[in-house]
Length: 246
Ligand code: NAD
Image 1: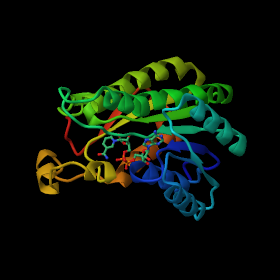
Image 2: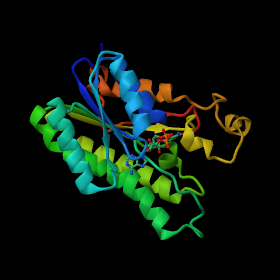
Image 3: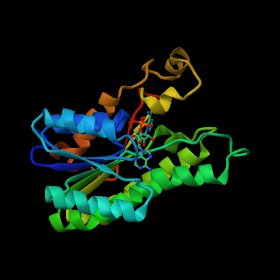
């Protein structure tokens, strides 16, 4: 198994892409810290499904935009599992609107969760990874961070920021055997994209592979970036978008 005896901390793991990553990792032997912000029952359900693969799984409530709460959560996870090998910064939100009408609070909220949240978790896991002289950090960016997207200035800025964060952290930690990479999904079929006011046929027409992606397909890529098969890859941004942003 690719992740046997590894411990993975995954934010926003109660649904969507985060949930798919959690279950793919558990299937490959990883113990899980399932971080959720509100949906306790859904997070516990992910833990139960993970345990069926014979791994340990605990759920932790944590708003990643809160510096102190993130620190306490990382410390609690480290205490419970004795190590953290993989950090997946998956928690993310949208507050879409044209810049002209976008409220300052909506800009701040998106940056606080999507970008600062990842910074918090990386900062708190940093000493653990350095001490272990190993670690894999995976940040969920987006094609919006590569291409920009009208109506998503806040979201695109946060996801572009994550790419800068990824490359800087990769450079900072490469000498300690720690890898940091980003995944840039296109349209993936989750509750986040269910809010988009376009029908599936219109979306498919924009995508060279003519369909939305599945959370499990993103999870396969995350699994590769978490495992030893990607040990010589760091500071990379990998699109998984059916060709949308090529
Ligand atoms: P989703 O809305 O289904 O899930 C997001 C998760 O993040 C939820 O579990 C939510 O509770 C959690 N979360 C939100 N705010 C949080 C906070 N403050 N603290 C902790 N957790 C918090 O979205 P998804 O589609 O599964 O997206 C997962 C990630 O992938 C996000 O970062 C998103 O931006 C990115 N992404 C998604 C798509 C897509 O098409 N679905 C495309 C590109 C990038």
